[in-house]
Image (cartoon, rainbow, N blue to C red; front, side, top):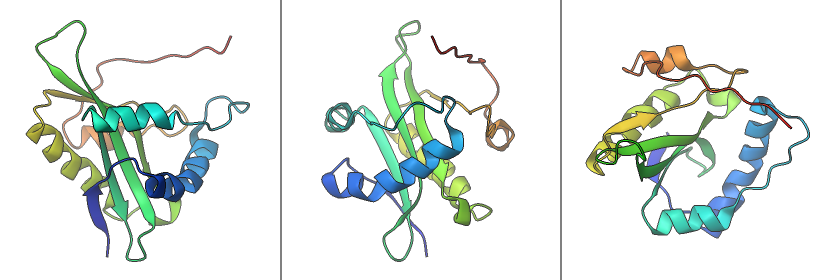
Amino acid sequence: MITYNLENITDKFIDDIMPILEVHRKELQSYDDMGLNPDWDTYIAMDKSENLVNFVARDEDDNIVGYVAYFLSYNMHYSDFLYAQQDVFYVVPDKRGSRIAVNLLKRSEKILKHRGVDTITHHAKAKNNFSQFLQKFGFKETEIMLGKRI
């Protein structure tokens, strides 16, 4: 049985998610020499100011098996619109093919709508482009992001 909940950034959450974030990083990182070092102080501050929505799936043993997090902010160009910008979206490899990703997406959208969000944006890594999955839920391509290491 999988449970889905909003979770605050606590010491327990950090302890629970760090091993999974490392697997996530190794699977999807763009630059091999970048080590994982989350800015937990900023995440905690954003969480406390309600500018972070952190939605987590846990299994029956309370292990994290999926997560999606969004930063909430008013758009700098369209200041009447509250945006939810996806920070991370991940399901552990042995749980893929289940409905966890679908449930994370649909349930988090309801929460975001309740919070007054007008627009949700997701980014997809070139290594794991899940844009076709998102398109099934009404998302459309609006931008292409490129990166360069200097």
